[in-house]
Image (cartoon, rainbow, N blue to C red; front, side, top):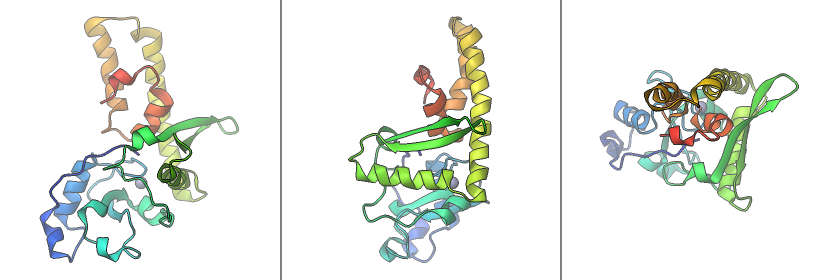
Length: 213
Ligand SMILES: [Zn+2]
């Protein structure tokens, strides 16, 4: 999960209070959240998106059409999200989730895969603890959807790991335009616009944070 900047003006159609997923809402959400699910950071298209209520509409009916309660998510995360906890959850548009959550992947020796790991930076930060629990469930739950998500993350980590190793072996000693040419693909890999930014940065970004946007 990465920080996001929400458009200050609510999409016009919300004012009618009849539809929370009209095209202007979806377009603005996808633009504000760089075309990704706010929970798992997978890329989503206009066709496969869903509009998630951070505070579920069943429990918070007054917030059904509230712009600040609407988030773009993949259908899997929307359907699989655990119940909203009593302490609440972080909101990536107003809480600094990147500073409050440790997000990375950890090699699992048993099957050579990378398991996503989420933790609160400060163990007394109740909202961060609850959000880490939510993200852990979505990524590491026993469902087929969670396994598919982990496979996509693993593939992405593998690809970038290869480029990072190449850079460390051959590119890091270069200078000037040659160095810039080496760094450009990594800049795209670590960008907020790329999939799984938080996990990719956590796993592979050490010493390369000058390339983060
Ligand atoms: Zn998702």
